[in-house]
Length: 339
Image (cartoon, rainbow, N blue to C red; front, side, top):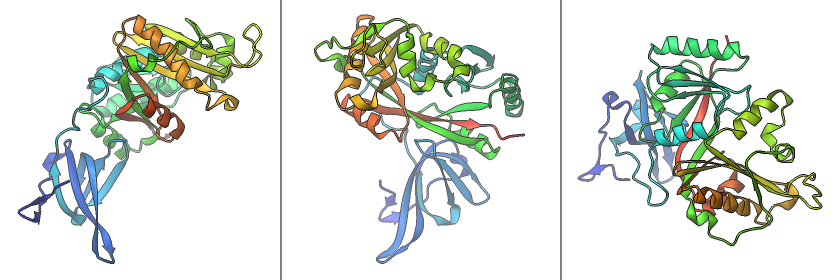
């Protein structure tokens, strides 16, 4: 990245640029050959009392002393991706919410409060798509009250790294003591290439998950949330479930070798719950499951794919890289402080 004009480093940002995407260079020490610098790119979320806060694409917040800055400038939004379907973050957030529908919802202006007995953060958190219609203090108080009545922690899902995401809200929540947890990346890909292989007769598709499928899904094992989990999993516009029976599966009673889920919503096919039994990994079963689900989604008119994955799940990331998925934006949750 280039910071110089006529060979000189220039600082061309100020507190007036809060909310904009910036690139800054800061002094981080000195090495054997001279000063050491660090470059940081992200949304400038605050500049006060001599300290800047910059939210990176993945949601992490970097704080820099103003005195350490040596150069900086406002930069354009991330360039359009060369691969993958075009979509803004709002469209994908709305699609993902419909594809993983909460059991109970309530509206607070542009916010949607979602609850499903604690089954997954996505179905038990606020989706903040716009202004809550009241002052933030009142919105957060109502959020805490609503979730408290349901015996759930108050969580707000914060998207980052897009052109219309929640960096400023996330920074404000952090200032108020709401802690960050459960980071994830939403990735997209063209759908047709996923199905570009011979049909695999090992993969069985169904419209609802049976007990065998549910027993293999590691997130659905809580007895307290079993009913809510089924409502979330089976909800959505058009849902498909894939199962690869395990060895010696007579009548489908043995633990599956692999499972997966796909929900079709217009042009989008959302993949989730792709899991392979530990003893059956490295056999291409995850790819086979996704291929058969993609084939079903293509027949319904879908053309684009999305999924959500934790950044530390390196095996899944490698698989999705091979299948053509690219990062679209990130998200994490902010949890209300106790008391």
